[in-house]
Image (cartoon, rainbow, N blue to C red; front, side, top):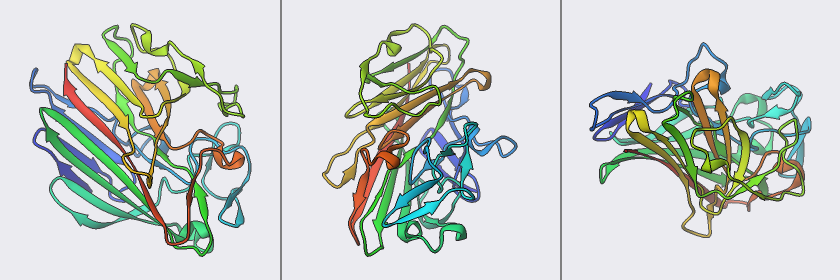
Length: 301
């Protein structure tokens, strides 16, 4: 198990490094220790708790093959499928991590590709993750930056995202969801986005309580704010890019699991099924490296 800490909170990852076990914080107003992330429970399905990487596609892919580099890879025996039989959440979610560097406040991982894809171009994309946790101006700031380097001799196209779950009291009228996201992308009944992609105005974030959601949104620098008034804290999921070689995480899938008292706020670089349509993908030239970043900010209300 890997742990990092700030002045007021502590983050724990499981032994393989592919899931968040817990993120706990002592609210300075109430003195109560709170669990912010709905930590990974190995007794549940891998995708129903914690936080995990989605790559080289996000959410659903509506085909049993995928083009990566110049080759087509069969997904019949790889990854996992949803209830409709669509390959879901990419292939790297359960890859083990090796620690490259660690301090009290940060850890730097390198992903170890599964043997099942060792002969494919996917295995020649070097992927690293850097978690850092700091207290800045009375705010807890968890930063997650992901690096991708193409060690193939041909270009490689992909998308990625993360799927963190947060605790919330969905029955409480004192829990609200706010955001700068103004556009919602329509989804079909099977939750595959409608292509060509278009956005419609949304009033989801004007509701006085968290609505039931499994919806996709778009914004240039998305910021989603979960405000838990009866516990006197708020969590903000913020994505941004500061340089031309950074991968913008401009899409956000929000899924509310009322039975589990949790909400998934998923920053992504593309919508679901994007690889099949060649939409909003990141291209890496041979030897090129790019990275993307998002932050989770925690503070009192």
